Image (cartoon, rainbow, N blue to C red; front, side, top):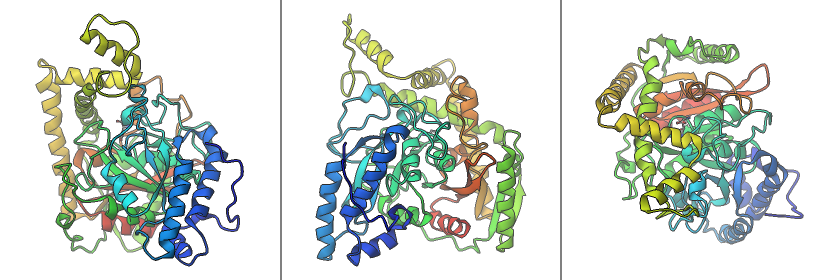
Length: 482
Ligand code: GLN
């Protein structure tokens, strides 16, 4: 992509606008979609080579689409999200476009259909500007597991972006698109959002169809938006929600239920999390300051026990690796993407060489772990047991929502790591997911919003978790805090 000269109205910092304000300007003819797209392309041109957030830019296509939508706006026929410039994580399919899942095994793969979440935004005249870098198959916490190189944090390029939706977070952080669509299996939307100082929402499991999402762990995976403004998360969520006839775990929109009839004023925080030894002191301080702020706004804030802290990560990593080992068995060099060029003896040999060549180290580690926990001798000791513990964690957490409206915590125990800081020790890397996996183990919705910066000027995140399908109340609370 090369744009030699781009003009856009310098007087207006488009990226700071909420979509509603941007739309008013578009409707009033003070701005065009072409201006908007050119603005974001100029930011991509300025920063992407260094940050590596986008793996592919659809510059010409986006401009063409913008011209088309400008015409629709003029005649009053534009969709509800006309001119919203979005980027999509490399795990989401987009018809006639590449999706590599951050992996060499899918290089050259083109999808013949679009993910429901992507299609629904296109149907409302959003414009897709490009495909965003991520950890291979979403497996990672820093975006260093991408076969296409790490994504750098725009705030400080010595530090990671967070993962696995690192490209999606940095694209918003560095004003390269208005909204990103990311995916979250154990924190992949919220963690990079926290590391980059933007907001990210993981919806209730079953709200957004997984159709067109390249699977990592199917009973955990969810798709959600990332943006600078919480209002824009709230804007996008209803469009991507609801059944599509393709994913049987999705609940239809009118089954989501009403906003819970509560005062919305009782908030719990889990003492074991807030006092966890891994928590960076600046984050702990900022978190307790947030609790004070909530109290001053009239909320009742109560510290509760959470007896399953030690079980969260083992449960998550046993079940997700088990699901991953099954999901990734489809990549065998026959149906999609890469196939070894080395001479092979027979079919099995071809499978093995292809997978050995094209999967990265972390993906191989997880396939092996998952295969181990599913093997006949260990199935009950690991897989069955983890399923039982998952149930306990879910019941306990949902029990808290009988009494409380929200559970809050820091999003991460530390700010963005230095590049390479955790790559040699996978267990240290996994520990970083402690605060985010609970929402995926339980299927509950959660959001990360900015919580200021630490002593090194790195962003910190505040997480709110709510009861199933209570995204609306959760977003209302988030809006009170930003
Ligand atoms: N860091 C977690 C993992 O590696 C979460 C990833 C995700 O949410 N996709 O599994």
